[in-house]
Image (cartoon, rainbow, N blue to C red; front, side, top):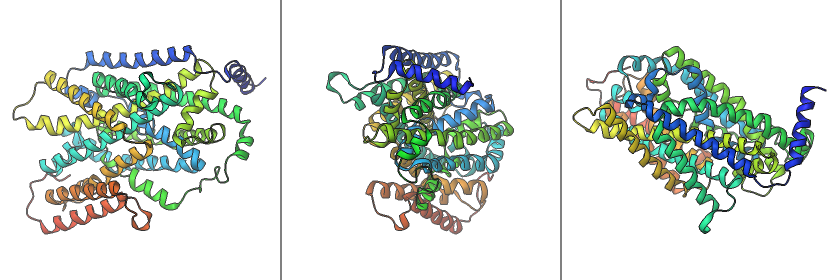
Length: 497
C-alpha cells in the first residue's frame, strides 16, 4: 500500500469516528492549552526584555528565517486568512491574485528599498518608520506619519480581532453566556488573549512564536483541513462539478479589482511600520533581503492557493452562509476530534501573529514617535519599556472596541491599508528617490492624500473608472508634493538619502 493510500485510510477512520459530532472537550482542552502556552511565551519575554530596543526591534539580532516567516504570518496569517477563504468562497482560485500582490511588494522592496533603509539603520539605530522620515525630512513630517500609521494600524488590528472572533464564534463558541451574541463575546475573548500576550512579550515574542505558528498553520491546513474537506466533497472531480463555472480559472475577476489590489497592497511594503521594525530587527542588509524573499514565496503561492481552495471547499460543504464564515464552520464540521482543536488553534495563532504585530506597530508610533520624543530629557530604559507596555494595552483596548463596528474582515483591513497608503506612499517613495522633495511638500502631501481618501471611504462615493479611493488620494498626494516642493526650493537642512 502506498503511503498516500494509508494516509487516506487513517483520515477516513478518524472522520467516521467523529462525523456529525460537536466540538469535543478534547478540542477545547487542546485549544486552551495552546493559548496558555502562547501567553506563557509572552510572559517569558516579559522577564527577558530589558529595554525599549528589546521590546520594539528585538535587539536587532534576529535571523532571516525567523523574520521571513514572521512577515508571512503577519501579512497573511490573520485577517487575510479569513478574507482569502471568503474570496475563494465567492470567486474561486482567482482570489489568489490578492496575495500575488504581496509577493510583488515583498520582492520589489527587497531589491530597491532594504539596501537603503538598513544601511541607514546600521548607522543611526532607527526604532520606527517615522524615524526615517524625520531623518530625511523633519520632525513635523514624522509626527504626521506617526499619526497616520498609528491610526491605520489601529484599524488593521481591529480587523484581526474580528477575524479571530469570526473563527472562534464559527468553530468554538456557538453559544455565549449572559445572552451576549456569540460574535460579540468572541471579540472580547480574542481581544483579551491577543492584547495580554502582546503587552507582555514585545517584538521578540512576536517574531519567535510567529515561526512556530506559521508552520503549524500551514501543516494543519494542508495535511488535515484540505484532505478531510476534499474527502467529504467526494474528491477533486466532485469539487470541480459542484462549484460555479470559473472557480478553477485564474481569470474569474475583473481587471479593475486586480488593479485596486495592486494599488492598495504593493505600496504598503514601503510604508508599513511592522516591516520597518523587522528591517531594524535584522542583523544586516543581506539578512533582511533574504527574509523578504522568504516571506514573498510563502505568501504566493503557498498561502494564496491554500486559503482560496479551502474557501471553495466551504462553498460546497457549507452553502448559504456569509462567505468569511465558511472556512471557520468548515473546520468545525469536517475535522475529527483532537485534530479540530489543533487546526483551529493554529488558525487562531496565525491571527494572533498578525494582530500582535499591528498592535506593536501602532503602539510604537504613538509611544516612540509622539510621547517619548515629546519629553525634553531621555527616559530611562526600564521606565520607557513599562510606558510602552501601557501604550500597547491602550491601543489594544481601543482596537477591541473598534472591532465591533466592522462586519467584513477584508473590508476592515483594506480600509486601513488605503488610508495609510494614500497618505504615506508618495512622500516616502520621494524620500528614497527624489532629492528635490521638501519637508513642506511631504507634510501637505501626507495630510491631503490621507484626508481625501478617508473622506471618500466614509462617504461611500461612486468614483470614476471604478478605482479605489487610494488612487485618488495618491494622485492628490503626488500633486501636492510636486507643486509645493517645486515652489519651496530654498536650501534645505534635510539629510537626503
